[in-house]
Length: 103
Length: 103
View 1 (cartoon, chains in turn cyan, red):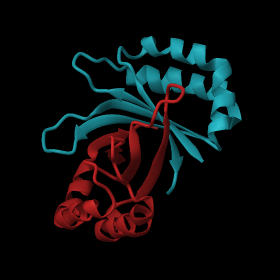
View 2 (cartoon, one colour):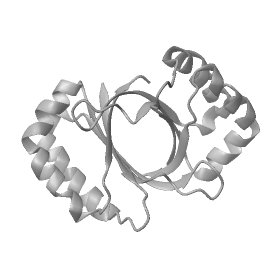
View 3 (tube, chains in turn purple, green):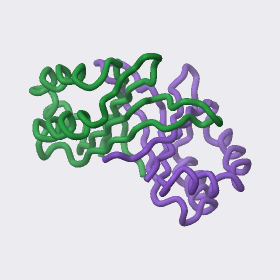
View 4 (cartoon, one colour):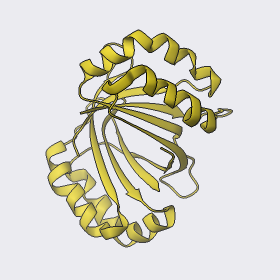
């Protein structure tokens, strides 16, 4: 199982519309990726590790697939539509990471 | 539900012993945190978002709690022992983030 994490940095002046992300963006992504996307998760940054430190990421979205190939095949045909929706909920540039689920 | 993410940066020359982390560190953490820790997850970085780009994080560990207070209460008495084990599996300095689970 692999996990695609989309990490939105908590930069100065950044905006993130969690309502739009949860109610519009992620359901659209799920609909476009179909059954290849096994699970989704979303978190909102609250705090950093040190007392009073801000969260490194204002929000994180995660998509789970059986393999990187399964992700690529499902994502490629819809990449443009999915990416084009990003400015509707944030002005940040997300960091994307593909990871293997170990536990 | 809150999620404590421990993100290990994929810096030049970094080392991360995934075997030790999965078999020794995380079970020790679960044992010390007890039932306050509802769930754990571990991922190993494979790739970044752009073709050929490296993963931003070599590994990520996640711990789930009912609240930030539940995490603080469970973690504080064992913080020193848990932190002291980090050099046994990595030479990186992790980034810690507390997030609220939204989906």
